[in-house]
Amino acid sequence: MDQIQVINEKRESKPLFNIGIREKTILSIVVFTCFLVGIMVFGSFIKEDQIAVNLTQKNISPNLKYLFGTDWLGRDMFYRTIKGLSLSMKIGIMTSLISGTIALILGLMGATMGRTVDSIITWIIDLFISVPHALIIILISVSVGGGLKGIVIGVSITHWPSLARIIRAEVMQIKNSEYVKISKNFGKSNTYIATKHILPHIIPQLLVGVVLIFPHAILHEASITFLGFGLQPHEPAIGIILSEAMKYLSSGRWWLAFFPGLSLVLVSIMVDNIGKQISKLINPKLANK
Image 1 (cartoon, rainbow, N blue to C red):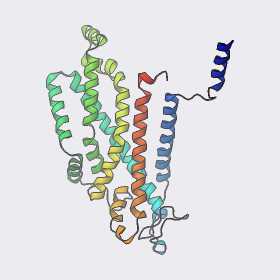
Image 2: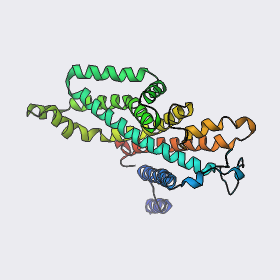
Image 3: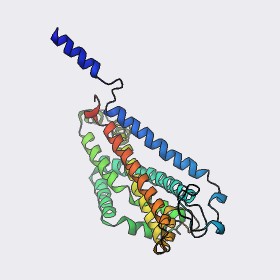
Image 4: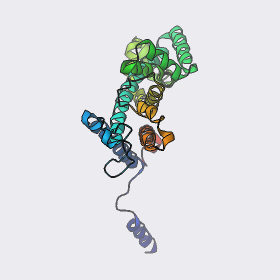
């Protein structure tokens, strides 16, 4: 009777909603994703007159009407910041997808097309990793004329090597498995093996890698634009906002750089957290927790 009573007490003490690690992970992914999508959607609907010059409202500190204050031209910093974040996130999505595609193709080629191709791809990966990203982005951006095209090409070309190395290592491990060897014995081509046997197993690593590229991409885009080699000055990008704000920080207008910089960091942390949560979600050790 005592044992039955103890079991009943344990059952009654359990919480009504028993949320495990996977449920918490999925919930955090959904919350962060909805927030980031909301920023992009809201930023896309901001009109030009909402960030237009208004000299009668210049240099206003943050208040209930102007949450992020106004700048030296009377432009609403809240709308400019959201517009800049939306633009940076669109660039981050484009560059991370392009980088992920490059990493996938080269990773598969290096692991499945023989030692010669693997040596060439490995040499290219080591070359890109050895050179600072910022320098390559600046050179590429300047060579193609700058602007949105230049920054997208520059960031995309510089952020694939680490993911390609991970995919290559994963493919090398899968290639030595028994079912791949059996498929080779049946005369299947390398292309067939890569698309039918190997690709489905590396999609989780590819997904996590693409998500983790995103924060690095938007930070590099902001830093290059801040230096004057990225987007054009008329674009409401975070890098341009921070670059312009540096001239007025000494006069006490701290909000011009504080809120845009903080927003960029928070968005980067959120996206990085989504990648880590997805990595937890696909971890087989956490499947039953």
